[in-house]
Length: 131
Image 1 (spheres, rainbow, N blue to C red):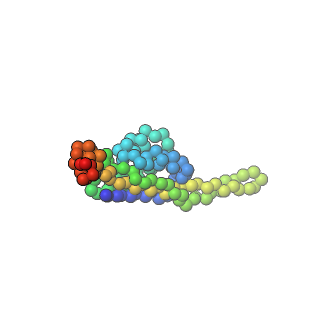
Image 2 (image 1 turned 45 degrees about the vertical axis):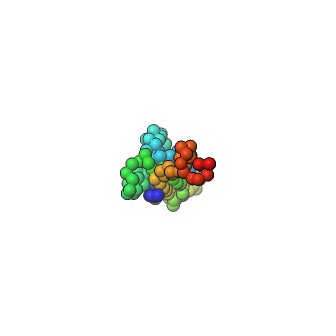
Image 3 (image 1 turned 120 degrees about the vertical axis):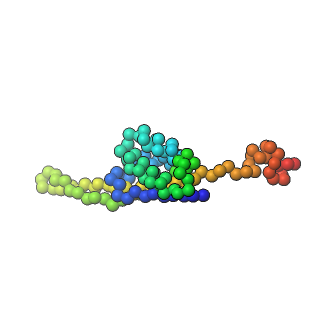
């Protein structure tokens, strides 16, 4: 079973907002996930789509996105960019510009195993099924 992984570091989207987009594609087929990201109006959909396409390119054996599933997808916090904004009476307030680390793991969909329910219904397979 082939697996590929792509990681996006220092993505300038807050992790809380990126998780909303990543939750849309987790468990879907790769082509369905790309379609869902293309139709999403969230700002994080663009960088998540780039990372998903990168993971597809990393998968050497299978070039067909319909046989590939988004196995795992998660968002971690990246380093914060700390800025200051002037406030009243000479004070300053810290502004935290959050970044994300987005990881997407793809896996090829498994082929149906022979000897399953269809084989048992046909009368082939294990000895127990023939009784």
